[in-house]
Image (cartoon, rainbow, N blue to C red):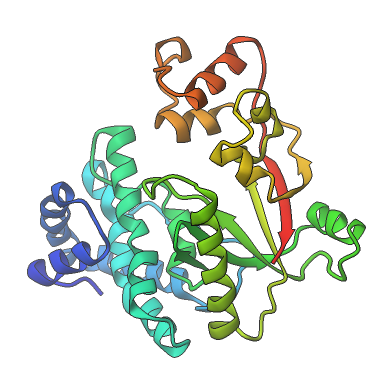
Length: 300
C-alpha cells in the first residue's frame, strides 16, 4: 500500500512531485507505516478512489482528512492515497492498451497539484486532490496541450446541441476539455494537435464510447474577454472554436485571478499589469464588471 523510503522516492519522481517536496513526504510516510489504524484508513480511502475503475462516475469522491492528522502530514495524505492507487490505474491503462508515455504524462498532474499547493500556501501538500481522482480512475487523460475527461452531455449543453441539429442529447458521451497550467501557450496549433491525438486515442482505447462532441466549462469562454483581447489572441481563437450554450448566472471573479495570477489573496490593485490579459482581468473588475464561467461545445 505504501512503499518504503527508497521506492517511495522513486514513485514520487514518477508522479513529477517537485524535488523540494520529496524528502519531507518520504519522512512523514514513516508515521503512516507505523500506525496500523492510519494504514487501514489509507487502504479504505484508496479503495474508494479506485472503485469501479474505468467507469464514468456521476461524482468524484472527496479525499477525506486523515483522522487526527494535522500540519504537513494532513496536507500530504492525498499524495499517499495516489501512491496507493497507482498500481490500480496503471493496470487499467495496460488493459486498455494505453501507451506508457500517456500514462506518465497524465499522472504527472500530481506534481502540478503539489507545486500549486506550495505556490498558494507556502507548504507541502496537494491542491485539489478530488480533481486528481479523475486521473486515477481512468476518466481523464493528458493528450498534448489539453486534458480530456470522459463524460456525458449536460442538459443545457444538450439543448444547444439539439438546436444545432445534431442527433445527440443529455447523457450521450462527450469529451470535456481542460486547459492545464504550466504547459506552454494555448496556440491554435497546440489545440489542433491535442484534438487530433484525442480523436485517435479514444477511438482506439474506448471504442465503445463514441465521442462526437467536445465540451468545455471555463472562464476562458466568457465572451467579455473579446472586449479586451485582440482577435488573433490565443484565448479568443480558443473561444471561437465553441458554440456557447450558456453562462452560469453567478459571477466567478476568483477564477481568472486564480489562473492568471496564481492567487486570490492579493488585493487586485497590488497585482501586476504586465500583459494584455492581466490588464483585461483587472480593468474589468476595477470598472465594476464580473467574470463568468462559460459553457460551450463543438463537433469532433
